[in-house]
Image 1 (cartoon, rainbow, N blue to C red):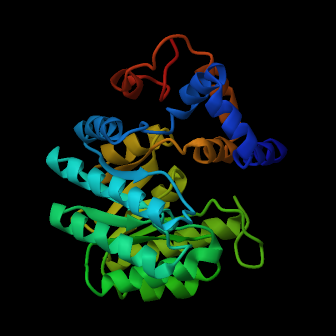
Image 2 (image 1 turned 45 degrees about the vertical axis):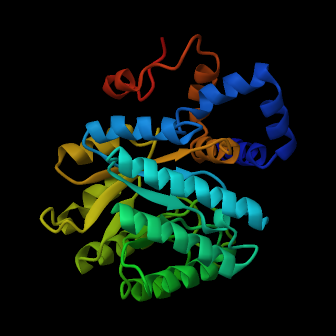
Length: 326
């Protein structure tokens, strides 16, 4: 299984294959049928339509226009405009959502001040719209840059959240500092390839213990937080720390994953959120989702060969499987 996972992570990084699939209609459409299990659409209206369906089910959503590592200032400005449009349209539709993004999508890896400037524009827009803004975490080489930018934004705004990875050893020192700042803290396990010198190995007992400890600290602190995991056993252990009258925490899972787990937590009266990514840059994201559990490749093959249009989202949510096959 690990060999299969590594093969799929390699496919995710194959730019040549990505371009061939995008250029060939015979490959592009089956690939998109696989992707739309995990991706909320290719445009802002498509993502908002998906969000409306989830809101109707009693779920909040995070909306994230996919993209990262932008090294062109003009492109970073143009991509920032997409996020601003997303915020405006979501507010107009009264969508219950936060706006999530990678700082490198806004040009931070080109110039940290450029990233801060573009992020500030988005912070002003989301503040005016009454939306939470959430900064995603990237590879460990960018952690200092992300935390620096988050801290600068917190000097002006109190609705800016940030993501932190339980896998990284440095989280032991980073988390207490973040607890002194406003804004939600999203705790994830962490999916990036990292050396064991700085991170716990995937699926290890050490990682599970670290996540449990950090989540407990967050929940007991009363700080705004998002417990982002699909691990229902972990959530069961954390339930005694979840004060349902606090309004401070939520359970967050990715679109297309953890459908049953999220439904279970919602039925237990916990606040839940589903994370919707959208856009055209879905190749890396989708293959990494499949690589996390290579058994998902079988479902991907079924999705790719499905005839006709995608099953309705309403049908999908009421079926035993997250995306039933006709």
